[in-house]
Image (tube, rainbow, N blue to C red; front, side):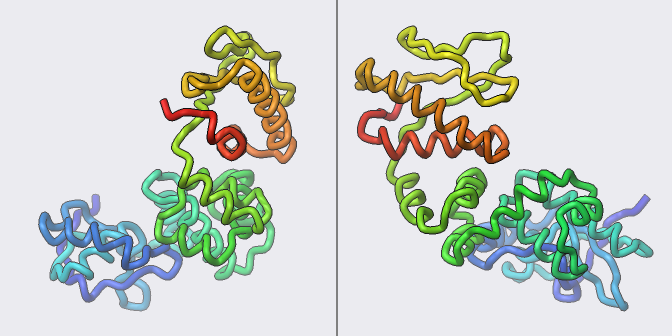
Length: 273
């Protein structure tokens, strides 16, 4: 069993494929590290005699920024490059602490290093489903401005996925509207054995999406909406669901797009609950 030991912070570098955060993101973590120290060991490997961190990269970045001298770490000797890559992928792709853009950036780094052009080959190398690779690589469609905002964590993952599915010309407007509008139509999925229902006993037929689920909309925020507006909104929702389902998007992406479209159209009607 491997045990952690203390290592000089300045003697540890960063493994090339491990994604790093901008200094602006690390500043808060650096303040915490300076006040309380580092308790969880980072993971290190040795490449040509040099110690490189491949897991706990942000912690190491924060320790360097905070001026910490020693940091606990576990050194993994004799591991292959692919084993390290799989560990990095597991840490980045399967945890909520990394946003969609950081996961996308890892895939692009791997593509560049190994010259991979096919999504299926990338999925096999990292032992992850191909649809997930395809979903992340859609972020190629982001503009440079949005990439910078994503790196600064100013854009959420669901919004990034939605923007990637829309023309770049619409991005600025969609982002601005998402900032202005606080209201939200809450959407949940239920078994197809249930009948979709909404507040005030307003009913709508099952959405013809070709999916096994149907939707239940909580229209509690629509306190000032007229019955005609509610009916129109349900029709727009069904139409939007069909449109995004035909693009092969997952449910989370579908509802993110539907919610944003409804906010754009009904922002003055929908009231924050």
